[in-house]
Amino acid sequence: MFDMIKKIIKIIFKIVGLAMTGLVAYIVWAINPWNMPAIFKRNYPEAFEKMPLSLISPFINIY
Image 1 (tube, helix red, strand yellow):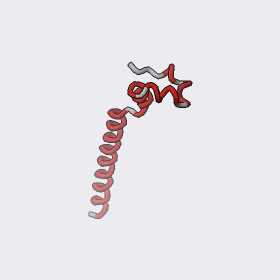
Image 2 (tube, rainbow, N blue to C red):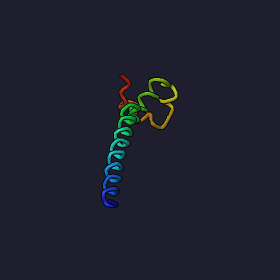
Image 3 (tube, helix red, strand yellow):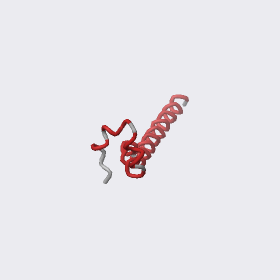
Image 4 (spheres, helix red, strand yellow):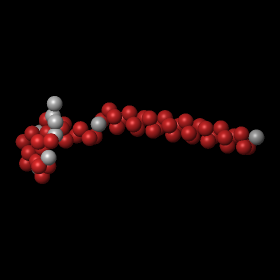
């Protein structure tokens, strides 16, 4: 009986873990942190050009 409860708890933890992984993946996909330089360049072009990142500025697509 105790072994069956352990198995059920392990299955529940695996399902919850997969759900949490899916949720985090969706949030990262929705926010898209790799696109942040493009967002800053589009919204604050003058400030962005003054930053040390101006060397990579031509490589950031803002469209």
